[in-house]
Image 1 (cartoon, rainbow, N blue to C red):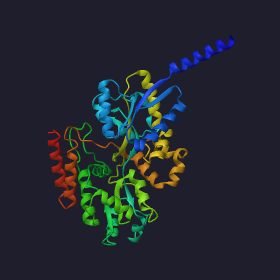
Image 2: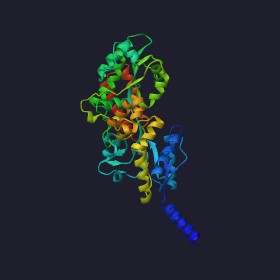
Image 3: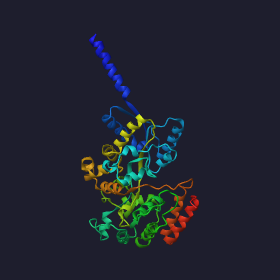
Image 4: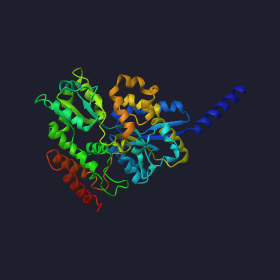
Length: 416
C-alpha cells in the first residue's frame, strides 16, 4: 500500500513539474556555421533552466530565406517564439509588427549587463529595442608586418591616422612592382565604415533624407582617391585582394573582421597577419560608428508566459556565458562588453589570439547599425554608391560626385 501511495505521489510531482515546463521554439539560419553552436547554447541554457525546454526548428539555409520563412509562418500562425536573423534584416520583421520590444525586459541599466549603447544600437529603431546582437563583425585593417618593416615602418609604432596609413602604404607600394600598399573595396558597407570613422551617417534618424553628402561623407570618399593617387591602390576585385594579402603581396587591407581566420590560415608560416583597428577621422569619438554585420535575436511570441521564458533564453545567449560559447565555436566577435573586458570568460582565448581582441574591442566601442536604404529601390542604390566610389577612385572630384550621388538617391528613394 505504502509503495502504491509513494508511486502515486511521485507521479503527481512529476506530472506537476512537466505541467510547469515552458517550451520555446527557436529559429536560426546557416547550419554550416550555427548548427553545433545552437545545440550547445540550448543544452547549456536548459542545464541552468530545467523548467524551460528549447526546441530548435529546422534551420534555414541563409538569413534571406529565414526571414521569408518567418513571414510565411507569421501569416499561418505557426511562427516560432524566438528567432536569430541577420543584423541588416530584423527591420523587415519589425516593419510588419512581428517583433516584441525588449525594453521592459532590459531594465534601467543595460550597460551593467554588457549591453553598451553601441551594441544596443544594432537592434534599436525609433527609441525601441527590437533585437539584441548575438554575433558581430566590423571593418578592420589587416597588415603584413614583413612588408611594413621592409618599408621602414614598425608594428610597434603603426600609424593611427588615415594620413599615416596612406604614407606607410605608399612606402610599401614602392618596394616592388609586384607589391601593393593598400586595398579597400568600392562598396557601400566599406564606405559606411569610413563615413562612420569621421562621425557621419548615411541618413538622418528617421530615414527621410540622405546625409552622407556632409563633410564627413566627402572626406570618406576622398580617402578612396588618396589611396589610389598617393599609395598606388590598384583596381582589382575583392576576390583578388583576398588572395593577395595571405600571399604576401599586399601590405594593408581594409576588410571584415570575420575573415581573420581565413587570412591567418592562408598566410601560414610565411608571415603573421596582424589586425589593427580603423583609424578615427574625428576627435569626437562618441560620434564614431562602424556598421556591423552578424546576427541578432528577436522575440516573436506574444504569449506572456512564453515571453518570460524567451527573455531568459535571449538574456543567456546574449550574456557572457552564451557569448563565450558563440565566440569559441564560430569565430565571430561577441556582442556583450563583459565577455571582452572580464578575463574570466575569454582571457585565455584572447591571450592566444590578440588579433581577435583588437577586432572585438572595436566592436564593443563603436558598433553601429548597417544602414539599409528604405523602399523598393533600397538594394539597387548600393550599386550606384559603388559606381560613384569607382569614379572618385579614378580621379573624379569627390565633393561634386558625392553631392550628385546624394541628390540622385533622394529622387530614386522618393525622398524629394
